[in-house]
Image (tube, rainbow, N blue to C red; front, side, top):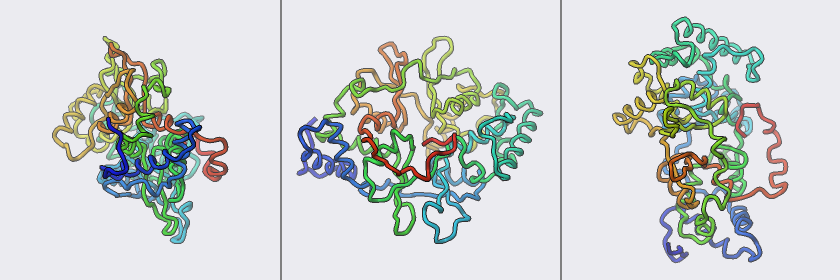
Length: 420
């Protein structure tokens, strides 16, 4: 592929940003390594330069919104997470006091499912606030109701479980504030417009943030939210530029990928109850798992925490199931999506790459398929590893010693179940 030049018109705002990196790349000191050059380039560009998302629609969830209201709002805007605004904060509050965290669609669903199980009195996630204790008590009551109906365990869960779930008092009365600090809850750790690209990339990779809000300090409001997916799209648009090609044409093994080896991949079998799959993801703190056919031992699908949206937004599709297995779940969802293509994003698919794949090919695959992970397979189709968006970003830059200083003061340490 011919290298792009500054004389050409960039094909997108992301490509224009890539050309800005190219200009900086050309003037870096010759003795610097490619990674050191990229670090220097990204440190010189403010996050304000990152292009706005096409929709440019940043939504917020109020802390007193019920879980049902939050789910409806996230689904209506077709987003998976949103900042939570503290309704008790004064009008002149700074952003530190205005926002209390970021809530994920998946986090809401997994929290509800967790509350439908009798909790261990020594559980580290035992709530301490009065409201949270009340919510947990409702959850225990709900669990007993389900048990009386024969729906208390993942192994016996029938299609009506999800209708019972969405009509429960727990779902309708618990507020977003009540689940603060639980699984998949992220702190509101924001950047200023003047912070660097390097800071943003490190937060999205080494520090495991799914998204990074960028604030306009003048108004105290969110200017944009940069996601891992948006960074991967930017990189895909930079194909052909010298700085990108020098890194992107390397084999994935040359940059240390995959980070997750075959023996580290958490798996579920297609004949297991779907709730068991989500429980495994919660317990193992992973975002997705491959689905394995029991007889052959081959991976035949993928199920993600993002897919739990269908448990609440489309419970009617499970009416006819006595016990919903992972295979039943994926089949029902795909059938439903064929009839409602504009209502939901597609279910997470099982997408693979070969061991000799290049970084560029991997980035383009992730961007084209709009997915968050790719499974690495050998010539026989056997799993050899797993690569996520975060893994790729982590191989692009490195954290200089002492880089963040006191940046995390007041944010860390965090509750045990938060991601950062």
